[in-house]
Length: 548
Image 1 (cartoon, rainbow, N blue to C red):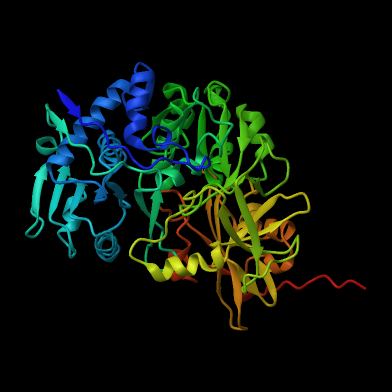
Image 2: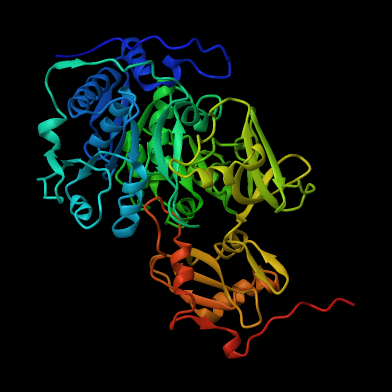
């Protein structure tokens, strides 16, 4: 039998804007929910439809927490987790927080220099690693690491580090979990999530319990409630994977986990798991919309989807699949500052500023731009700790992001007179062509209206005339082919002349991160390849229409 000592009392939380410990902190919240609704299903898994009730989950988490504590893990410790989505990682995440330790997941695609960077940055002494990924640690300096626990196979030698098997050390059958030295507070760090590193080395975002609660909890996403089951199809090293588990947990609701997003099996998975709400990147919605009609189009059971960004075909998608659509703007460092109403009708919007958040759109000098003009979005919240707590071991980046008392998102937006916000581009993705500013996202959205185009990535490439030329990389819907001239004519009809790409490249599939974001940095690095078609080399030049 596994017992736990009572957690010590903490300071009285007098600020009503900050949720109480048994609402937001993992340890007391889990104890409360196990007592109040122990028989309710918290987790369901698509591979064999196994279910965990809150009471069962309580026991699993405490078992893993005891094992971690026996391996020396204590309050405030950083622990690396280098694993694919699986049951063990869910237990580890919640067990670490049960002890007051910090969960630090690593992108499973990392190796070499990227892996070395995050291991060093984390200051972690312990790593829990899947057997398939463990050999990668043997190829890099391991910084402060002392101990590696290997899950899913036999351990391998990793330099001079101690290596143990997960089943041998993290599944004790009895013992008592010692209480932390002080109460775990809502503002304590619960996780570090690494940014994608598209503008430089990955930064380690410190996330508190309050931030994750505010990110998509009951007050921020009121359209999701305790009766819902959230479908998780994103990796746990991404906020879109680990966040939903937590925000459904604090609601006393449930989640379902599928191995990965797959267009052909998605609706069947939704139906089997009983999911009622899901998050879809805009490209995922496009993939589903371009599948042939089937009986599952209305037989799945999904009621709500958060789609980011919303596509031009939003209304046809909603009508076809019979679900309500919402959209948001969010990022790892923030907590959903913009949220829409159900089924927004304004093309391209990400909603309005939610309650408790302030937003400004500014120029390069942090001076506010007029309504209708494009500026970088700055954000701050009324609730303390509702946004990131800085970048771990990177005070320079923290100071730069939080200058003038506002968090700088690095994203360009415009706002209309009714208070709706519209994402224009990542500031680094904006293209400047012969005096015209071009939103890559806007161009992609228009190109994707072509029925045979599945994916589109628009990038800027250096022009011999200075500034940029526009390049698009495309892939086709399965079973269809693309013709360069036909695609070009489509784009010429759909786009202003200065947005029409000069360069067109076809790929079987665009390179994507495990969280389904197009790896534009890789495409920019490849640039104009041998298989890229240059319309100007074929005598096709576009100019603006002369207006008398």
